[in-house]
Amino acid sequence: MSGTAWKKLSDEDIKRMSELLKSGATMLADTCPVCGSPLFRLRDGSVICPHCQKKVVYLKEGENEDRALEPYVLEEVRSSLFSLLRKLAPVMASADPDEALPLVQLANSLLEALKSLSELQRRIAEGRRGELAGFRRPRVGRARGVELRPPR
Image 1 (cartoon, helix red, strand yellow):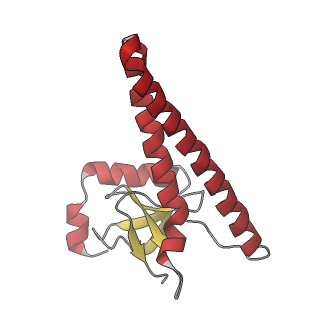
Image 2 (tube, one colour):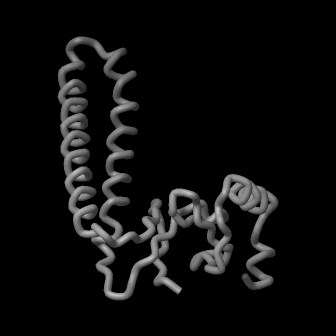
């Protein structure tokens, strides 16, 4: 990591890095392509930047970017749908009976979308397990605004 990148790290960043190490994460030789901070591999195999607080996805040479990111994008959609449903619940509880029907229909649509998404995620996971039979590769995570990096 360059000297200028270290200057960008706040006390909070250093504290986050320390906590990551204490929790069993491994500091990698790779640096974040956005801020230059060292990357950390968590125990679950995901790689994160403690400064940006985002996960990093490594792509292999020739690997399809959309296919690699598919599970993480679907998880973001699931999280967004669930968040909308949580916000809708108190509105439904306090709604007048005349206003309730559209809210109930919206809640039903969100629940159906979550159900369909869960089924899609399950099918994708099953398909990938079949593809990876006998081939073990670390799975890395993704977060909004992720940076894609080729393996070193």
